[in-house]
Length: 274
Image (cartoon, rainbow, N blue to C red; front, top):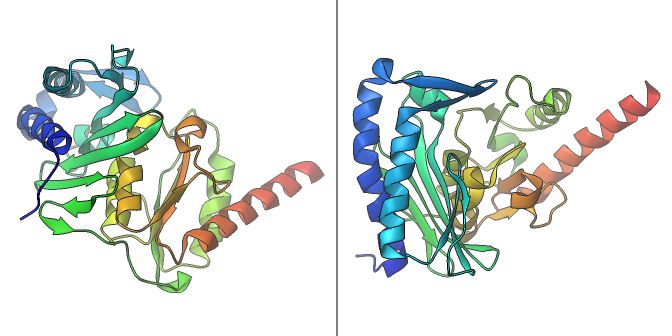
């Protein structure tokens, strides 16, 4: 039996409580009140309700901690060292289209470092959780990243830039470079679950640009505690600030970074000639 810390229990209990209403709403997705925030970026009543429950439960347990939330923005706390980073529904577009691939994501940041995270996929009751120095788990099972060493046997995940956002040309170059060297590329529409799947060994790696802190905060500690690597495109640790992430097992992180850098160099050379 796993012995979890008090802070992880707080996070998991908050996610499970928030998920009750979320699952009910998913069953009646056609009746949701939906407003348009921007191109291909929807917010639903379910987002707002889920975030409200998460904030209430986490604040009750740790009243001094601050918040960074997708819908509610940044809220300071008396404790300046700790901050919850919350995405109430990562995969909102999937949710609104009745696709059962979305998750609640909660990361805990201490002095700028993500030290704990949970990613809860409620439809299949998959609770991914990790804490720095204590490992990563799916429910009661310890997680390890994939052991595959060869690019041509590897599956990678990524995200496509939404309509109206920059980066489509670069994305096509990235995909062409990686696709030519691997077994396949997947795009499922939830960054949090993409990182959780890398931690679980379901994918060998994942990359994406134009990403927000609440999309990846929990997944960063998840992959690292499962034995993988998570960096920005320069191989450094500025993922949250730069809005970019590259995650993979210990054998394929460097080859994946090299392919992505090569694609960027090729596009830059093409632009210089134009």
